[in-house]
Amino acid sequence: MPTLTYAHYRDVPEATWRWPSFSPAEIACRGTGAIRINTEALDRLQSLRNRLGKPLIVRSAYRSPEHNRAVGGAPASKHMAGTAFDISMANHDPAAFEAAARAAGFLGFGYYPRSGFMHIDLGPARSWGEPFPTPPIPFAVELPPAREVLAESRTLRGGGVAGAATVGAAGVEALQAVLTETQSTIQPLVPYLDTLRWALIAIALIGIALTIYARLDDWKRGQR
Image (cartoon, rainbow, N blue to C red; front, side, top):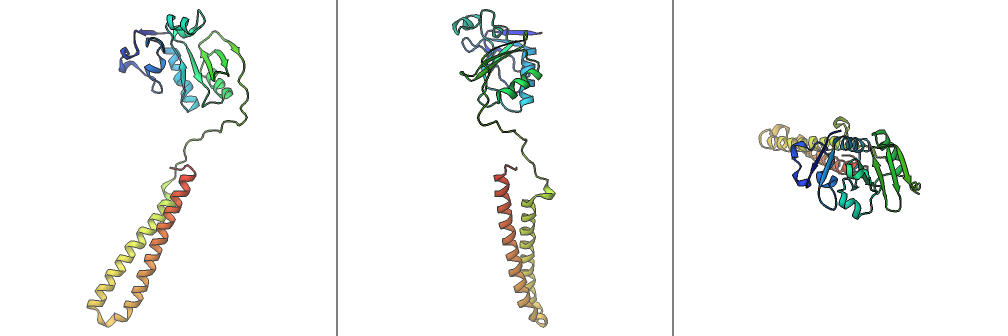
């Protein structure tokens, strides 16, 4: 498994970083800023992020030997090899997270419910610590944002009605002016055209109201 080590995460060439959900600063040693890039581990971490569809808060990734000693890490900690990550459970159901991590290829699991994170590494297969308690309120299943089909959009329909009625009212008003000035023989029709114009204006206002209502209702439902 290819491994690259840099004295500081700022030394990592931008063109070589291929894990879009993470930055070198997140993976670097918290004590020294040094970074060891284990490509297999980071590939699996990105795969886990893609499976879960939500951010991973990395509490600890690579640790330099001196920083590992300073924080009381195990003498042979996988963090020093760049193959281990401590991930916050603040935004994850621990059971679902563990299942996704196993599916992504992680083999070692350490449970730290009091500190709110789970350790994952590439192995060997083992586990330690207290299991996370079942949350009193289960995490809601996250669904992708609903997208309206334009042909079925209530907002589009309401806006279309309003637009058509507005154009119609303007056209009637123009026709009414022409008839008044040039067609004295059909002037009896002018009052009816006036009524039609006001009716179209009323329809336009109703369309605008429907558009506003539909957009507010869609916003409440999380539609975009």
